[in-house]
Length: 438
Ligand code: DAS
Image 1 (cartoon, rainbow, N blue to C red):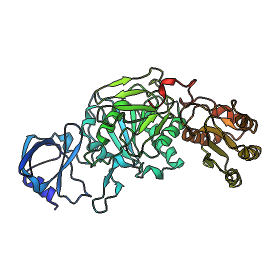
Image 2 (tube, helix red, strand yellow):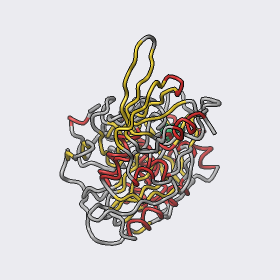
Image 3 (cartoon, helix red, strand yellow):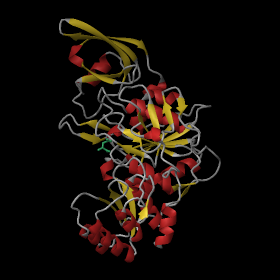
Image 4 (cartoon, protein in one colour):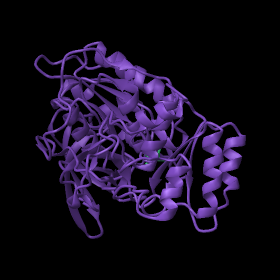
């Protein structure tokens, strides 16, 4: 038995107990109060973990603990084993949490220091007891991967699990997901889930749940809160600023991870976030979101996977596009410069691709603003070559949308019509000046 289990056993400590700990620090003492958390299997077992009132988890070396006072024994709910599904509380909404992996569901492997997907959805939900005050949770682990390993076939699997939960009567679904490709998955689910009638919220973390600075507790709490709202859209909920003050709910087709490590890495691009969320309340930032309604969610899972994104850069050779055409790719999203431009010697390669039936869509690597191929001569030539300008769509949203559109048709005029149809807020009618770097 590890030191932490022995320590808890001999002092009669149980998960969920509210304790005050006296810790020896240098020549002095410090006092910490919090909820006893379950020891992490992967740790050496030298520390007792408690959850402070602000949601942070703190590991305290057993050897530095002078005394522990139990202020309140944990309730049955806190002691529930990781394998139990909690009894439903009358009057609370029902939310399914689908686990797919990522940092939010990971912990540090103390042997190697690497972060590994480890939590089951149950453990994730139980690691943040406050979420049980917001909704009855039904956790379900559907995969356990880092999101850089996400695939279109996994998007379809997730969409089917979401539809099953919502059509089965759940009031909302939360998807615990890695942050690296969360924007892609949020966009994909926005197109795959037709007739969406309840909230679907993707949530992740920039710090693993077993680190004191973890953002997972607040992100998960705000995500569950948003899943009980009347927004019938696919959203991403993550920190709205670096401090533990509020989260933002972003529209799934307009959100992007814009920083490698900041807790507020996710930003709405060319759009206003749907809401600010605190643990207790939601402040809507707009009213034109799709509202909760009756009905059945359908998974429209036809997707063409032979689609690529090609970022334009000085000196790029058109042969890269030729390679994609010869490799049988059916669609290419060009991340053009500025208003959506490519070098003029690239344009004949676009023409050839279109003539061979490949859909070539144009977005901008500026991310903010919208493409306009009518301003400069190279843009006009690109239009003439048959390229499809994609308004203010993010490149990754256009990529996912083109996969979904090409799953339905390979007639290039129909592809153009569908790419320029607004299905899930991916295209805004005009670009608001106040959304730049908001
Ligand atoms: N590797 C990252 C991912 O799974 C970790 C994370 O940020 O969740 O997206």
